[in-house]
Picture 1: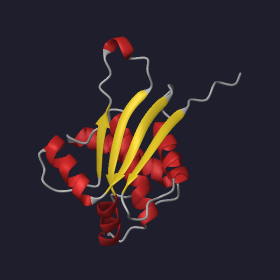
Picture 2: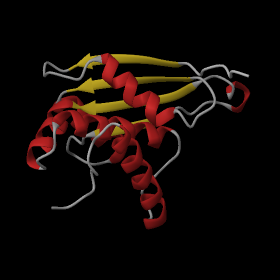
Picture 3: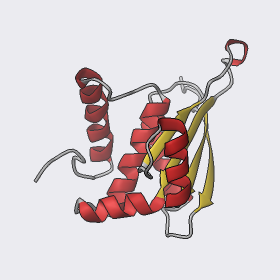
Picture 4: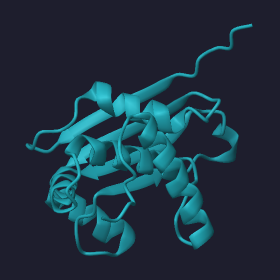
Length: 156
């Protein structure tokens, strides 16, 4: 018997003038990260410049710099828990590009990693303590390997 496929509703907002991955790639990376979820999913990916990335990081994490990806899981009231809203990812385009260059990574691989990383945060994964970090990083390695990308945590 065939199961019904889950639906991922992805809203991509581009607020950056820099080159960004196309929506097909962003969707593919989200689908890979979210395939363990048996329910439909709605999320937004907002691609921003450094000024907006810095402002959001300062406002929500009290860190006065732009970071690569911010995850904002949806805070859905109990009476609405059956809606598929996962949350939002904010990705700072210049930071991602700069990190890829500094770390000697293919930009496409770094983008895939950060989208997957952000989606896993929306699913509740975290890396605050060592055990959680190892579980999350292991899953990231596995998913990126399926895409043909190297271990993002490997050190030369």
